[in-house]
Length: 213
Ligand SMILES: [Zn+2]
Image 1 (cartoon, rainbow, N blue to C red):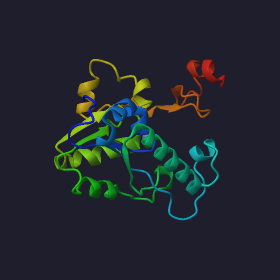
Image 2 (cartoon, helix red, strand yellow):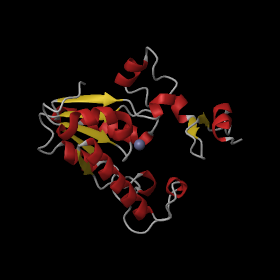
Image 3 (cartoon, protein in one colour):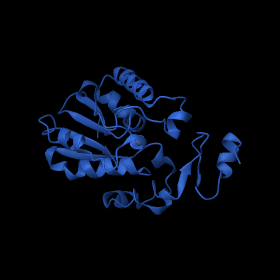
């Protein structure tokens, strides 16, 4: 997609607050006011909850405060990029109620804003929430004029199949997101972004980067 401020509206569907900006920051800046960043899991948990391991690692003891801080960060990022923003009220994965659906996303896709627009959604690489969002958007893809997939960063950067000649066909078939290699890996708990096998502790890359063993 060629970034241009002229043309029909573009909606970038971001599962979490960082995904759209990390993956498509340059494109968003080029599209400017034509683009709207739609964050799916953009809400706080309903009622008081224990903080998730991720929130604790990020320095938050209160999940509602973490959600507010991320929303403010998103507002600043969208202002810098010159794009509009929408945050759907769904809480992030650790705070979802059992059996939770993505009805709010389906309702947005069925709203009057989307016909005639281009919708960009993540390919769903390396993260189950991303794969759910991709599935929901592709299910309603006829509501948009055009629906395109973007590579999820940073996950795609370390996925063994991404960048291979077969990657495009795997994404088109919805198989890259379900690659068993992606499920067998996890991120360094110290947050150095190295990938290592979940059964084997820290790998050589991780030892080089953060010294963990
Ligand atoms: Zn994400």
